[in-house]
Length: 475
Image (cartoon, rainbow, N blue to C red; front, side):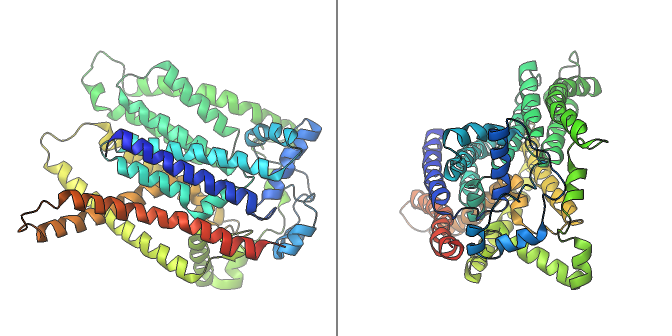
């Protein structure tokens, strides 16, 4: 596939995403998205008080939240004023959304559309990451971008008032900037400072950034300094520890200076060493279900069963405040697609490794290894953070894996392309006796079937909105 054809396809994916995002933003009943009232109240406080909120005792009432989320009628009739438990969160998303609140007099749909736009930018960055990692397989990049665009639960989150949209975008930008460090053995200060500024903005957006983007950037700098093949050929250039420390300082000094603005503020209002406000948050969220409590109530097997079932379902789509799952048939079909993709991805890894081992001399392009390493690290860090949080609190929500949706989507696309490629090769062998050249037809069939998988996801978005979200969540 040519770059022009890939770019045109990306435009169609983006248009479809924006159309679906508009539909979700306008038609999802008010407040029927996780934590949306608390995020809205944060923006409202800034707009009215011209200051940042402070999380206070009593701003998390588990009984009120359970009553508020129990039925759509409760959600529509009860006040959102008591729901202010996001007041500890870093402020960048809310500061950016405040002018929209002011211009539209607090119109909830306008604030949702702001998140939709951020999600559209994320789709584009997902494509660019795919291109950066697999420049000779643009179909992987398109599949990864389509996956990010059309997973129903992700679309629902990207169409709600939620700082996840900005956090995911900034994490993806850090990964993209980190990958581009490998384009040259020498990195300009401007590129390093740009990475540092993006990291700093992420520190002002969400705590997820600390255990995902920061280690990824650090790993990229280490790989560049210690393993970049081109550096070994330039003995006169600084490399190793000296290069790593110098470049890390250029990146992390501006990042930490930007983050320090928020940390110093928190020290002044929360006291002690609570630079992130997390100690105050943990003290305030009294009554939130804990893993220890569930372990006593359900036992280890019951807890694990609930963890895996809820995580899986809510990754694909469990809407509202986790109250509206899809029918089992949808999860079964999505599970089948996932299993095939996983088998294909492992198959692709093995085939790719054998091909690289057979090459002489072995490949030295960083695209062949370093991009994949960063994607793997991205996934592992996100899953690790999700598991760590669930050691304390019960938060069995697949949306917490969305910061790593891009590597998941790329693996999904690669796996399906590998399976279809092998099927195509098998059919081609059956047709070897034919005098007609079937290769163009087989190539087109592979592309069409590949596209149909993501068209199914886009269709599922519409089905979920019209059949599950609106009927079940409207008051």
